Length: 212
Ligand SMILES: [Zn+2]
Image 1 (cartoon, protein in one colour):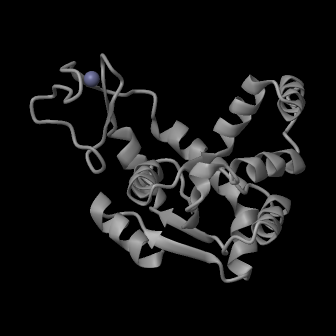
Image 2: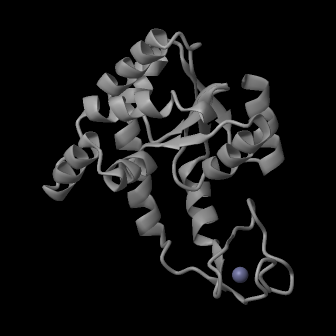
């Protein structure tokens, strides 16, 4: 399964991605993780990435594409992968299509999990967190136990105050503007599928399974 999952912060993309990854035995490939990894290994690409980032510059599309090319040929990707945070630009989207052809891989699917802004804002501002281990609790995705005691560590669950309406709106705006070009690129090619993320986790997951 070759999948690109899109979704604004708060739509539950991470939860769905983790579950698909576990059930199908395919990795989640995140460009953020790859860049950090490249820097750590001190490869030639890694030092390019590092100096770019130190100068506050964007990592060029070719560099990200070569990292993706290396990553998706690793053994754990033999049955597929779920891409996260990529592609962000049209050259990246084009490059990925060419790369899949070059490696004789099947076409990938682009699926967006969509939840209306007002509901995301409500979800994120109702988010709670364990004061000892940091586990997130959310009324829809991961409800807290009635006794407000963390199921993982027994710590007490408290409200998170950092996700105010305004910061959530700002994060949504960033997501929409980052995704707009790539979204219309895939839409024009009939490759953009959208599922309703405003339901419980299992319903969303079953819809994902129907599509893939
Ligand atoms: Zn805890």
